Length: 342
Image 1: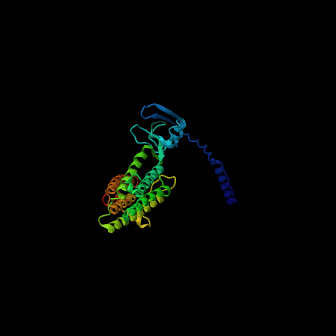
Image 2: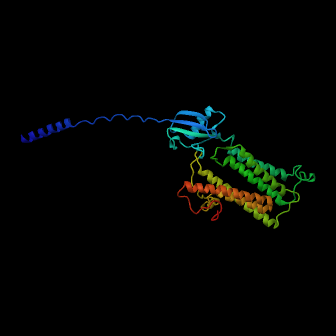
Image 3: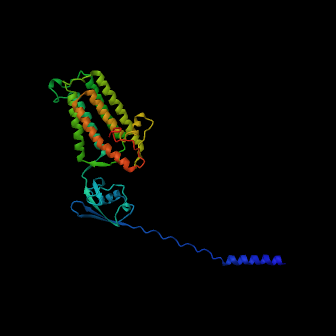
């Protein structure tokens, strides 16, 4: 009896505990986050005149989105022509910059400047390459009004002249094909005025070189076939190396993405130079023109090579600094364009 009484007491105690235990209250529904919109004011950089006020701009809007909204009000200034900055003396903002990540409050002021008519980089590159290709061949075939009339449409008896024409044409045909099928150009456009400067340089130097190499009084290299062949081998090897680097750099980029990666050597031996150099495409380009200079022994070619070396060194140093700034684990052994020197 005592045992039964104890069990009954335990059951009643358990039931009372269950009844006394309060049920957890349901959690109140979470309040939806309130979106804070931005007010964007666009001011003319020169006149400080207010051009447009954009209300309720999404905080996730990019600079490119803001340019598109501005373009709706000012049709003549398409996004590629626009330059927006936070301060008149600051750098231009990138298209991918997000509004809420910029050092501005909910009311943001941007200074606008017109970059002028724009051209795609591909168009400029093709113009730079097609011009020298055609101009050089005009001198090679000795069209009228270039040399004395008795030499019109004549052909040189020197093998080096024909070889130089083939190498020059090969170089620019390669660049045209790379522009069409290899290069993934991250920069969208460039000012129209630049095409006159860039094309003027390439076209004029091509005419200068072609005039002397294809001149009826042109003399072959001092050391004859040995010098010509040495220059040819240097030129061809460097052309293959340049193409290999361009393909390797293309494979690093993802279509539609501007993210960067550190370039490393691949199975292609021509890319092994990446162990020592940040921009071997410029190194091979320089080597090609050195080979062409050796092969032709022509002063205008040597001058063009020197100027190209100076310009490519500036570009290579800029890219090298960019790599060091962006990647903490960037290989410290690498130089910009020449191993252990530059």
